[in-house]
Length: 427
Image (tube, rainbow, N blue to C red):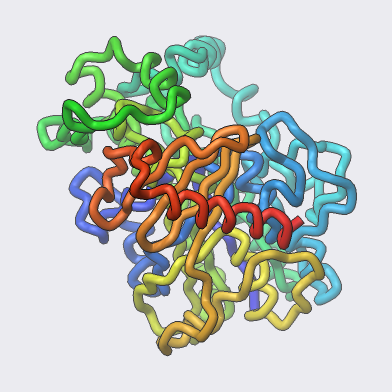
């Protein structure tokens, strides 16, 4: 079968119209979800771009592949899903914001298919200057509104167009393909085309609930991050949120371009389609925007798996991004490479019960910050020191940090043991 992986950047797990989110205008993703197995408890291996994408590509945890932050290179010998499918004769297209940190490394993809900056070079000078303003740090991270660029003047349009052309070429030659389409949207800046911004009813945007007065303080690193947005008024917060959901609608448009091509080419019934996001977006939960934290808004991500042979449904088991590579290998008949930390989701795709021995915890990491999350507990460790403990059953909003409560000392020690065992077993 053909394999199409659609990946958005910064797309929250709940930013889908089919989940009842009134701000999410996502008709194309909704129709894909209707034909998919949706995993409602999928977690990224890192709430930041490059580490997460390298885990998706390799099926390995962050501390194992070495990309602990956006500016670090992977360890030598990186083996990706593209390498795994090459012996089966697949054409391998890696398009868009793949975020490889070592541009000389062999990624397994056909490098001449990589999308570059030509879309930006083709903009009129006044729009290039506008884009430079939008992407300045403080503008990009703390503002949002209607943008002057059209649908065709965002990077995602270039990526989707290249993906369609690549699939057309492969089908025309009778070749199987792996097409990994890394759409840059809805990543900030949050300035979608004006008509997309206008769709968002700002009167329907509620300011997310915050920790009650008297709640224990979060880790100091969280408090420092909150300072970046402390000056925003409620109106400005709503403007940023509206800009985000306008970008979600734009990303959905580009997803539709690619999905429509499958139908037009007559290969939908022969194509395995997966959709996910590298990480989420805080959207002012905990008075934060963007990501870089181990809160649910950042680490919990969407995952859809669709093929006509699969019965649509919803699974609640814990799954991780490292599971994507072995799942694709399993479904297309490729050997799973040695050293992969994930496990195939195929047993969860047939509608049966949870297999014996399925994981009961998920893990995430940026640099020296690590998270372990079970059905009840979440422990965040900063530089080797436990910094936050949340009871996810009684406190799903992660408002009450229990790390200083002696009554939970044994829980902290047990979860630290889980982290150490994870590190040593997945080196």
